Image (cartoon, rainbow, N blue to C red; front, top):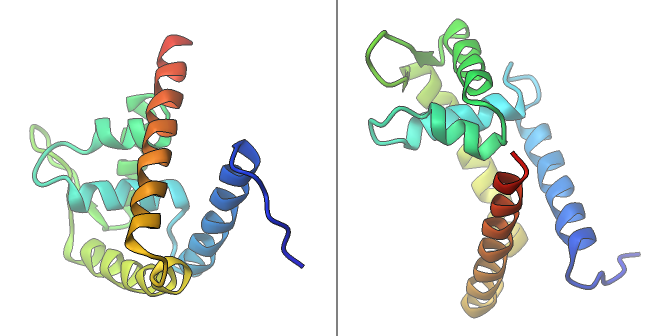
Length: 142
């Protein structure tokens, strides 16, 4: 039985945990962790920029830790690291990313694809405000 949870930290947290569990199942057996997945995604989508800062921000870790995740991906031949150049996904990395994105995209369509666009837009607005405010709190605590 599912209980309706009012909007707030519990709802956001439980939703995030459920979505991470789905991602975890999708990544299982592929030799990549959730933090590495984030690093790979940001590498693929960085548009030629160095993804390390983006990875650090997304994972809420120091840039040195983000670079460790990228190094792990390089050891797995998913990312290419060359001095003086931004990290870039290898063909193997792009293939893995596309396969996982395809699976998670189908799941996302099942989860919220039939929700009215206005509801999705409102949820995006609210969650972006909460994310920005949480980022400000984290920045102030440094």
